[in-house]
Image (cartoon, rainbow, N blue to C red; front, side):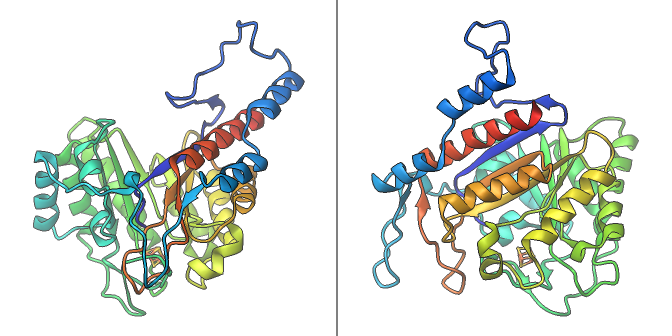
Length: 352
Ligand code: SF4
């Protein structure tokens, strides 16, 4: 998935409400802060974005920017401009990856954020996303640039150790371990995935320090909803269990491989929450600009939240090539911001 502009809409750390720096935490002693649930609901009803806000944005052309037609594509809006990857950290990470024959989804997907993420970008949080179980997926989602085959080569047995050693040597703030789907393997790759996280923990214990701030596992496969496989990965020691629903419920079959679906993905996230040790976060992501409507987005957010998912992020879909699904529109930062506020409010209400 290529996401130039992203936003996090839920961020609930179990029983602790967490607001981002741009969202002020209400001061309970303030006379402005409602003392009762009814008061809070009234405040949210008056302040929170509603569907009509998104309709207003659409009617004054502030919700999104047109992409043009196949013959006459329009230029990308200015907030989508790509930056050239570079910097010492970028060079260091790239060299280590090639030495150890490792893959990253950042490169496979030709992500325009690559240089920014690897070097720390504006936030100073250096992040890299390692892709395990090879560079070839058994599925064929319409937005994804990863190679596909029904019979990819077997996974490299040294990969868990190589990944752990590489991560430990980089000193990243946040590492994301992701994988292709491996429907061809008897355990669908769950054992290899869990082994990679365990090796990372072993390496950290060996060097007696925490090499990364957090180890998240993103794009974890759905393992076709197999509870045993989900449990093995959820209990491996990861900090964040992330499985993407990718798009709104209504567009699942048009966007994702036919073996994936909305219910199965939500079930996987719920299973992970049940099985994982307390404190493990669950996370999911959707792309905007696939043809969804604001009411479908809001309804999907409500279902994700009702499934107990802690973190939800939104990104703009970017077409990797002309062979892939077209972009329907470029969502504006203003509309992303409204979804973010709405997501924060949903967490707030759920928490109470
Ligand atoms: S499951 Fe779909 S999105 Fe994930 S790597 Fe395979 S083709 Fe890409």
